[in-house]
Amino acid sequence: MDLLCERLVPGAGRVGAAGYLARTARDRPEVAAAVATLTAADDLAALAGTPAFDLVRALAVEAYYGDYAAPGHTGPTGHDDIGFHPPQAARLRKDWSFLDEVPRTGDLGDAEADVVVVGSGAGGGLIAAQLGRAGLDVLVLEAGQLRTAAAHTRFELEANHRLWWPTRFAEIEGERPLALLSGRCVGGTTLINTKVALRAADFDVAAFHERTGLLGPTGEPFTLADLEPYYQRVEADLGVRVRADWPPSVHTVRRGFQALGADLAPVDSYTDFNCSRCGSCLQGCPTNAGKNALNTWLAPAMARGEIRVATGVTVQRVLVEDGRVTGVEHAGGTVRAATVVLAAGALNTPQILRASPGYAAIDSPSTRLAGRTLGLHPARLVYGLFDEIQDCHQVYPITAHCLDFQRDFVMEATTIQDPVAFAASLVDEAGLPLWGTELTEVVRDYRRWAGLLVMATDDNTATAEPGDVFRKRLSGLERRRLSDGLAFAADVLRAAGASRVVWTGLTTSHVQGSAPMGDDPARSVVGADGQSHDVTGLYVGDASLIPASLSVNPSLTIMALATRVADAIASRR
Image 1 (tube, helix red, strand yellow):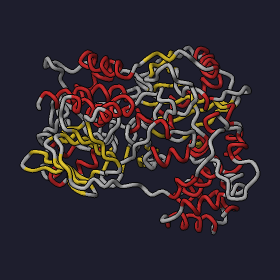
Image 2 (image 1 turned 90 degrees about the vertical axis):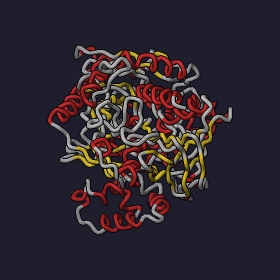
Image 3 (image 1 turned 180 degrees about the vertical axis):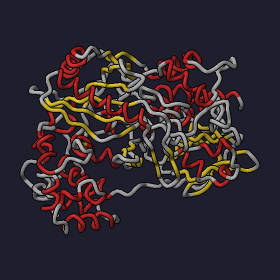
Image 4 (image 1 turned 30 degrees about the vertical axis):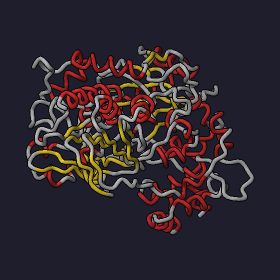
């Protein structure tokens, strides 16, 4: 098996990748089947892009670029070969026991509460804390585990295992699958994101009324002004500030933007002044300088005894009787509550709704819409190779952005994924994953690549179905946005002096709009207050609410809308 891994990812066989595959393949018969398929192949290149090829390549990438070394290995590791030695990783003695962990399930059993909040991310964490402060008995059900800053290290594979959902994919007609990334931990994706805090544009919010008939408190079409007080409250809680402390790599790529008549501006961010710009955001901030739903809302509420949080609890369905919600079911029992807030994320919330017999039986235009309007906000990373060391892995990942083409695409700078994600996501011009010597030649120069994140505006045409089935058909306009964004990013990097440009496949962590809010039940799943049009006491409180996909990072808007939902629930107690 080491020989196969070496062909896919030169260097992987040398560090003993076969041992890594064997350890991760327990209870995964598909791994053995994929290895057998590739081993028997006369022409490995002919299998590039097939599920078997992708699976074994991904595991070989994890072994080599995740810094695995088989027992007895004394030579250089993958991190040594590419010079990946940030302080947080260099002083870490890696403990690979996480490979033997199985997902922990909670022992909650049956319970009762005034309010059950399913999920603890940008929406759920805020809503739970606000309702707990208002005196309600709040129980938060979280599928992941509680891990505080004390547990966060620069160990990419361990963080992937403990803090992230296993990568899911959206099928796209005529394209490679799009990777769907999200957090599975207390704090949700806010624990492992880049803390970018951007308000929606006025034209983003204008689309809310156009899409779902959403009205503001005066009965007029909903506008950005209606979100203003909620943005202000959230920004105050998070301590949002301008990040103009650009690293040298931003100034390097800025030359390219300016040469093409565009420019970069500082981003707003929910990071405090203790941020050491270490680059560990996606593994959880080790200093708590990066703000999130856990350290901003949940931890204080838990310390005051205002909420309860049960971890390792995966909710399967909501319970509905005579048009009212009565609670939720999870693998270990039933939780009874007169108010249920689904905040499990825009991928999970519609699946829970559609898997709930009492909800589906209503069979109204509103209930049928759940999961039918998913927005993906697809993105890719585009990297330029420079003569000088860039070290984009040792910066606060996103300090600048270009909004010059915001209606079509937005660019953020500068960044690079940690070695496993960087290597695993690279594709060739045909969209197939890089492998063999072509892959290792790119990753060998890891410290000299500077990356731009390019996010294309989305038209909410994806779907989410039970069983983690996600599908998307790209329109001609959406394809043009993606191709124009890629082309402009490549031009920017070349104009800045890059000698080579590479890019990744499509991905996203900005899913939204799968249970939209609105005042027209035929075009929305919940009302302007987040409550179901059809089920009293059932609310949605996460990114699913957003009626039309935003052109920018949606986290601040998710929190603002969640604040409105919490206010509505508290006012009805």
